[in-house]
Length: 114
Figure 1: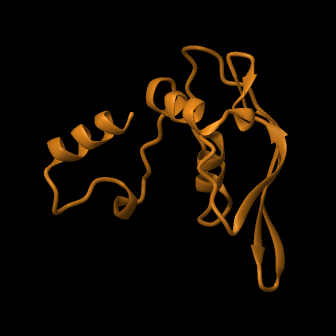
Figure 2: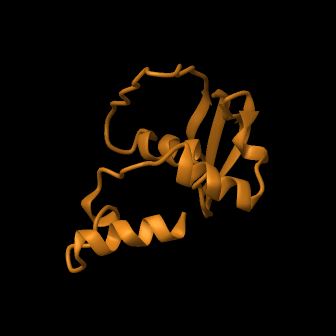
Figure 3: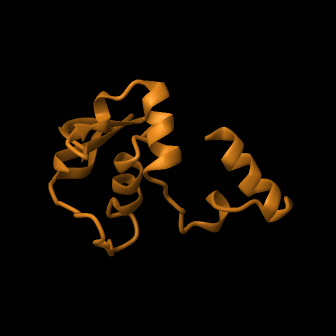
């Protein structure tokens, strides 16, 4: 990741959630991201998979995977990337598994989607 910035557009004006962040993760490495609530950890994670939605916007930077910038991928290529190369398990239980649906059904749904 090179010089990544993510801004939230609010009625009070723009709020920078991720401000010019750069780092490398090599094959086999693990990166742990810690910080206070509201400091931008989830926003950074969503940006890595290009899952940022309005009112947020990636305003600068590159997200390089195997030498290619995923910010330039079309929707088909992005779906393939998410299904085969990268994924994210959200810590917030309300955005993870659905407690009223069987786990197997949820996993099957993810497999069929990708």
